[in-house]
Length: 333
Image (tube, rainbow, N blue to C red; front, side, top):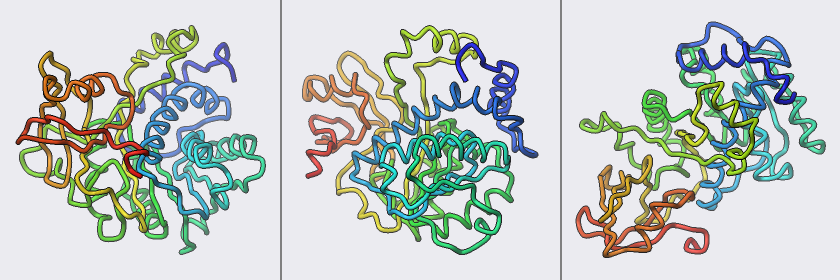
């Protein structure tokens, strides 16, 4: 597939389906060509969101538990491939793929087999999905707005068999808050790796915080803005290529959790001349903080420009941040 061969009627259909956000009443992938057009465009944008999530997991010092990784609802398979690329094929025993469309599962298998010739890649069988065989890592991506209850029940059963879970969604208010509710239901079984820096119930779901939702922003590769193919695609599809909102949760049964005192910034920092305002989430809950430029000029500048995960340890005077530092691998020891 290349840019001149894109199936625009198919892409328009998938874009409309995504914007409607309604539960799917059956498989919607029609052909390998349909998937190839999606994989080159919308699928790659999802891959950029996964890159941001995996950057944060690396920052937190997390590594996958090994064993099989299952990409559930795989579509073109971009999520599973991004995970394998980041940690290396040697970190996993096999890559399993499942989608309610056999066309999609076969496409994802072919793509992964070509990308990782030394890795066992297979389409998960119905008997495997219904078994109790342990899983290493369960990967779920951009499905929550289209799932009927039966599919959610299947995911729940797979989560119960998994040692770790990474679940990424588009970043809308509805899907983010729904993901937060699922997170809270799993706290007795799993420890939180990211984005949270605590293991308490999600403070965004508390009364009084209804206008908020836990979302973050990724950054596309800078070269795409000089790539006429991507520029034309963004214009034709009506997409702002600069904006990559996403929500996610990463859970692991054996994670040690975050070091004490860390905070995660929600959404984007808002920059004003005397301060940067952030929506801060930590073990105490959700608060709007002001990072004072005069007191912490380097921190003010960094928050205005950084493209790294917004995990910080603040020095505070009530709701004013007067110092602190980003949580980075070297500061994590």
